[in-house]
Amino acid sequence: MSQTPQGSCCPAPESVPAGRPPAVGTGGRYTISEVAERTGLSAHTLRWYERIGLMPHIDRSHTGQRRFTDRDLTWLDLVGKLRMTGMSVADMVRYAELVRAGEHTYPERRRLLAATREDVLRRIDELRDTLAVLDFKIAHYTGYEDTPAVSEEAATP
Image 1: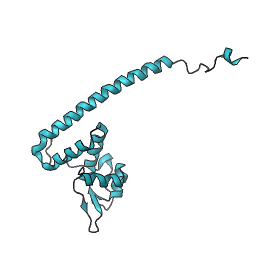
Image 2: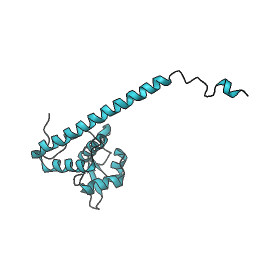
Image 3: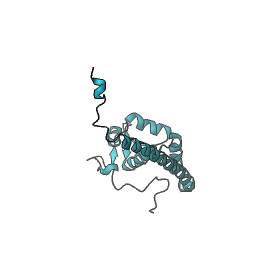
Image 4: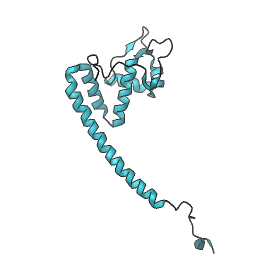
């Protein structure tokens, strides 16, 4: 496993998430609207993430406009994955705080992620059970697609 700089969430990105190259002339710096377009998150959500501490400090241009980096995009990709796991916002913020605190928090980060993993595995089991019920019902109804909804006897006067 490769080492990462202290406090970082993951290795430095080799490319922008989803394989998109940096925009020409940005130098790997993105406005909030560019990040919103790339991530599918609204500008409001990105500001909220920053306000609650889910995002690290975002640099600003000389005019005060937020300037996101490739590393920020990589972090947002991780946040999206954590959201998909069902992790609470409070736990995501706690994870972000631990990342910023440095390498000495690795054990606590691991515990938080391991607990989330267990939750995901439970949800997968529940979804498999639900899928089995759907498969059973679909199999039950197979062959009934061509049957008229009203029988001929009921349709004749």
